[in-house]
Picture 1 (tube, helix red, strand yellow):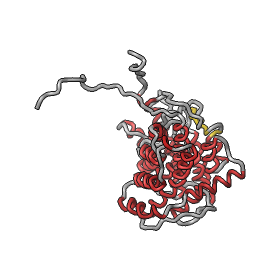
Picture 2 (spheres, helix red, strand yellow):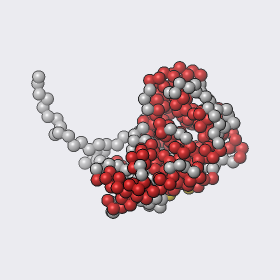
Picture 3 (cartoon, rainbow, N blue to C red):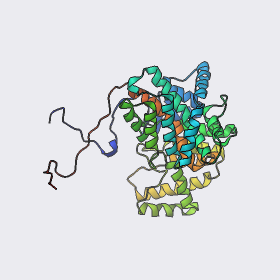
Picture 4 (cartoon, rainbow, N blue to C red):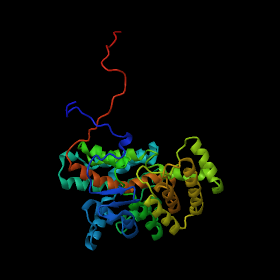
Length: 382
């Protein structure tokens, strides 16, 4: 084989394959840690605001006091709903379907309304402006579509509220309590970025083609809609519902494993130890006084014991989705908003990756190994 035609066979799902360099963050699976830029992500969730971490991913550093206020004001302006979107949003909501599907359509319309041009054809400032504008709109659009689906008019919080408080206000029409805001803020910070997960990789692949920002973010949303990615928190709650009495959790888990079913909320593709996001969200759930926390703890212990018995050669621990569902439910969010809420945070990470990918200037174009019938057979005549 010549260098031009040689191929490298890699593991299924690209497991462990490094496809590019990034300065945005990393997951240390063996250590049970992950970071954004130079900071531990869990520590950021414990100590900083959502806007601070958003700024960090965009600028590579945390803001000072003046920058905090300026960036928060910029985001508040960007999240305002264009009146021209009222008619298409109403039509999208009336068409129905899962909220994340509606959000994909709404973001496409918002990108068209903004006049987003291909990343290949715009300068750095325009690319940065487009990513901030559309990322800031994600929570506004999600809340508006949710309300429209209930025959309620969208509301948009004033500029004095931060991103997280504004999102909750736009869902309920009321200002949320500080404890609720902080709980959701910690969840959102903890899920902004997490290595080259499916949605981040998808968004970067589309960005590598030079597509516009809206197209890249919609691609990320499409990947996030899969139950094995963004849909897992609500399915983890379904597991709690299916188990019912925590006393029978071990028996139920063993039966599910015997049937070959996946236990949502357990195991991770990267971590070989406890998922640090799960530990953080357990603490958040405790601080909220989550009604399901005790039952969730009992089910968690029983399921982990069942997994150890069934798969003694694997290190399977609780992942982020298990306690994410408990936290989001305790905040008062309905399950249909879970994945859209995940998108509110992950869009920040995608946007940083889009800008980084744009700087590479090369399209992502892997190969596939053909395993079909012997090629170039004679085509039979009719």
